[in-house]
Image (cartoon, rainbow, N blue to C red; front, top):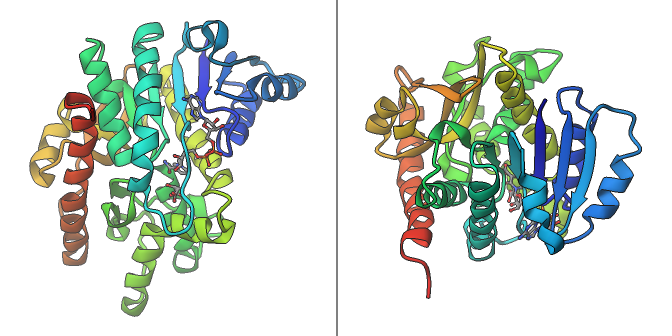
Length: 329
Ligand code: NAD
Ligand code: LMR
């Protein structure tokens, strides 16, 4: 039996993500939580003839506790999205406390759940979640994940003309680092099958993966950021987690984890100088079984990208940690 919860379920990501969960045969129970509209979203989805039993909760009447109790997997897309001209870091002021409070609920009501954080800025919200769980004495780094799958999905899509594959997702391209501008590092040299990218196209391709989110923010012109592609990517990652929970082996996903708490992570922390980093992670029923170091043998161009990434990431991580260790007055 798998119970999943979506926190922020009435939003632009939350609704299509909840639809994908409801349609999945892997989910037995689905709880939707938001500060608005969940009764309506849950009623609508409840007419779909799939296995998952669905319920919607608001904060009143202990809604968060009822949504989270018994959960195996909790996905958090709660929080405000960007408008044109904003960075993801500009969302920190509002989203930091939303994530802090929701993870406080998880620590209390389902401390063993796998936690998947979508809310931006991911580079800071995941460290916030880790600190909250540590303070509550329930931090298991193998169960906390920042969802960076959209960067991988974009890399697959934007390189299709070079891979020549009919289905863009048939290529595997590791994207490491964080989830924001220059902290996003696509490792095209590690693609399988191998990619031949003309030298004069490389830089633009890297920039497109790093700043793909801006394309959507600009096109939506004030109405938010990526929602549908994010729901696709978020569910792709969540489905891998659920399959691993159910005992499937051999699943590897790139995701943003706390390196010192995941086997194999220390080596990557040493190489990068950061404790939180997105890398390939082998998943099993206990969560992140092993962080895989794919940084050996990267090209000099990728080395340069990695340096810019870790410089940016350090500040983002510290900001998240300090939000909990020295809360703003
Ligand atoms: P949205 O505004 O459409 O939806 C957010 C939802 O969160 C709303 O329904 C809102 O009511 C709810 N919410 C706010 N405070 C809450 C609380 N305390 N408890 C529960 N629910 C709460 O925004 P969106 O487009 O769905 O984006 C959500 C977040 O996801 C943003 O921070 C965005 O930047 C981020 N995002 C991340 C990625 C990624 O790759 N990780 C991709 C796209 C968007
Ligand atoms: C994305 O990459 O699309 C998201 O992080 C949303 C954003 O703000 O760009």
